[in-house]
Length: 126
Image (cartoon, rainbow, N blue to C red):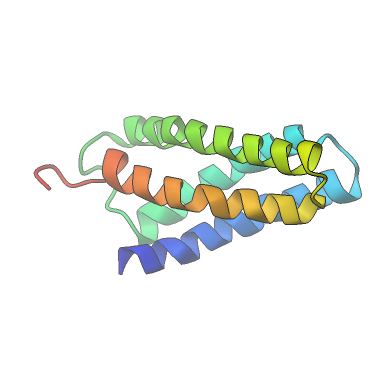
């Protein structure tokens, strides 16, 4: 049931990310790639906090400091996927801003869960 709990945690983080994107890229007109990066970083922090409370057992393999560093290291790949998807959808294919953000967010969801589950929070010996 870990994936179901992560779905809700990821949903909360995605809601934050998409809200920031809507407010600052769509309404305020800031550069979508900069806003996409800032929102993604803030959503990653929320995701980590909620994940260690409701999904993964924190401190199983690493100290909390190293664990958080690994979450962000894994998230760099997610950020690259997110930014690439936004760029391709918006700049190359003229897909509407918010639809592009939703597609990019859904694209990154699978990577985030799999990488965190395997690389960061996996129990030793499993």
